Amino acid sequence: MHRVAGVLLVLLSMATLVATPSSHAAPDPTNDVRDPKYNEDEYTAFYTPPEPLPPGQPGDLIRTEPSRLVLEPSGQLGAIMATGTRIMYRSTDARGNPMAVTGTYFEPFNDWPGRGPRPLIVYGPGTQGQGDQCAPSRQFNQGIHFAPYLDFSFNYEELFVATMVARGFAIVMTDYQGLGTPGLHTYVNRVAEGNAMLDAGRAAMRLPDTSLDPHGPTAFWGYSQGGGAAASAAELAPTYAPDLAIVGTYAGAPPADLKELFPYADGSALVGVVGYALNSVIATYPEFGDAIRSKMTPRGADLLQKVQDQCIAETVSKFMFRHLQPYFTEDVTTLVAQEPFKSLFDMQRIGYLKPTTPVLINSNRFDPLVPWTAANQLGRDWCAKGADVEFRTNEQPPFLNKMVINHALPMLVDGEAAMQWIADRFNGVPTTPNCGTY
Image (tube, rainbow, N blue to C red):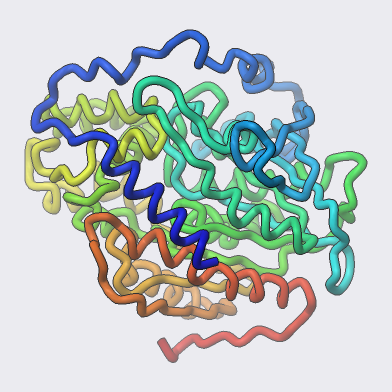
């Protein structure tokens, strides 16, 4: 695990050292120039949904195909011990409309050594970016993605997936809305991500020729963006997907209150994710698009236009360490407290609904990107509703905060204990909630 953490830190350092951000909004010649040989036309047919969508219910499979699983492009330096299936399934967007979402199902080679039938983990990936090339279901075919000039991605989610399937867990990982499929990725949209998670679980259970019991146990897993998606799925499940046999949810560093992220993201290596979030709001609620854009400076408009086609490493390399204020016409802190920003971000707050199954929330007290306070408040909100919540605080001390090291590293440091917590839920071990003590 220490070796894996070192790899992540090296890759993060490489991403942030690739380029120095310019100090103005000059046209970026590397943004939209793509060599045709990197356009990945082989993905077009699968990722283009039928129009209109065929009749069906949320979680119904639209199409499937075998998926190549590799740790790096050649496929020769290690393997994921599972058979991959690319899936497209029906889900529901934040406005209640049917949508097609893609993902990957991993059928393990190894038996499940625990109690009962093989369990399913619905895995919410962390921040990948906003371009179609960032979809995790594509990344698992490549391990490392590159297209000129700075369109580079390392599939960091394979670190946990490879471990989980080796231990006998079946995995289904969603791409969320708009990653790979047409339309913009609705980054950190609470309802769209939660529904995509829940329907991925349904879709996996409906796949033929797997080792899953169609009514078998399911858990949710995610960190950062994925932690928010997992948390949202947990609280939406009682009303949206009561048919799933959910045993628990791991929500690592969940961005439960997006308004709190702005001062943390400001000036950090990941400041560009604010562009992802604003693009998501405009895509989901276009009636507020003009009001939002009216508060953006030309540099802000440039940010939104560029990041919508980028993966996270490219966004880091081009926008790292910039401050948010030059992107807005008014003070940012004041803006997020005004309409329409206030209501739009309040709609994305997690914690208004009660999960009816156990939840583990894990957060670093000194997380420099996704604040501990919001994650802690999420646990308190759920506890007040009578939910079974265990909240764990990582005390990893501050270190190079603007490099967001203390956001990335706890994903690995806390991962093993989180996997054991999930295994305990599948094996029927009693929970140890700590509401009122943290």
